[in-house]
Length: 516
Image 1 (cartoon, one colour):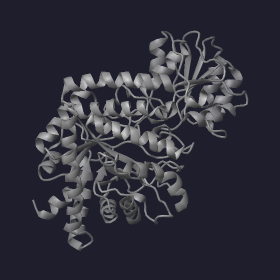
Image 2: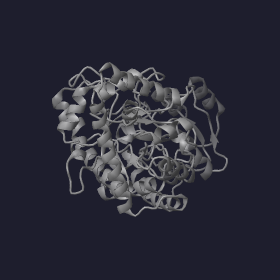
Image 3: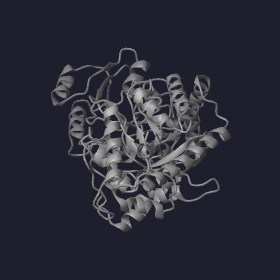
Image 4: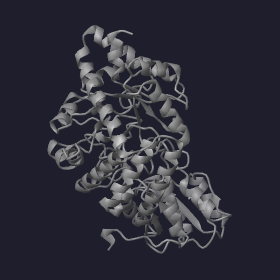
């Protein structure tokens, strides 16, 4: 093991496939790998996750085990059954910082009990309606509210015993392109960035009695021309801005195999440019059809070559490693101070607490608009959502499952195209019709199909799983007017359970401050 190779390993945060660490990963961990990022395929259940992290930490006690656990639509530890938390949009809609902090703490204790060190959360993006990748992952559209709830959630995670990584710096909320697929551009001047996108990040980076709310910072794969020509994850001016705002911890890239910065297979050049741009930890995802070890080696080999050619120096890599080492020490002390045990028994108890907090948040977040959205019996369930949620990894079916569990005889239809909509209307069924939406923007296919269904079935009921305020506006623009609607603030399991309770007449949701 050469000094160069060890230095390179100190900036890498790879993923892998399966629930058993492969040999190449364990060897790298013992040789100085900075950390590992876990995805849903690594965490089929909590006991398996706890056993996996224990094996990783046995191989290298200083290894930083990270995962994207936002709650709501984006969950890793509860991906199979759905998150016990309703997510950021729901917490923002309730607008109770105490509850947001309790949610963060309960989630932090679950992560810590499962052996996770660093949560790649919270999302501090200020949402713009119609954003294809942020949406309900954001606490809302108001910068000050996103800052308040983002900091409350992050402080809760820290009290629970884990680290926080605020994302996606300097802001991904105003984009119209999904960076999993292409490279978005944020067309905003510096005044707009400082008055909108950067407000939550500045709040999270501010020093408090226990340090900043953000232990680490994840950069976005977006181009911000006002800051520089390169994607923010590779742009030196973006890292410099983070340091100017007071961030002293690691800067983490979003996954370098995303199509915004690479072809998804060879990430070598993106890895080198990220370090040149000021990043400290390079996140490497997993790519279907490609060996994870090959993706890892493409990054490691390119970085070794960059040191050999003079593009990178050992001193530069060592500085990044020092930041990560300091974070790892702080996180171990935090878990110990929180008194969280690690293992299957501890994680089961933490999940019960998370479920209780999540149920309260979901019940308070879901809201009925339009005519009363009550189902009289088993419905036909139609899903009009068109776009795969790449951050969540799928278009979740929790609403459909909750409906089927509540009403025996409910008929869940596959996603319908125009012909499917016409066929359903010709069927002439007397069952209630329940429609699931996410982005029914006027002029779009989701809105058009919903309008056709409403024309034939004006009594239909909608469960809207996208952003609530924008969803209500879009649905009110239907030719038939605002239908009976439940605004679920997301499509997670907790959201779905509360929405179905409302549809069954079993829940009277608490009004938000805006509705009082």
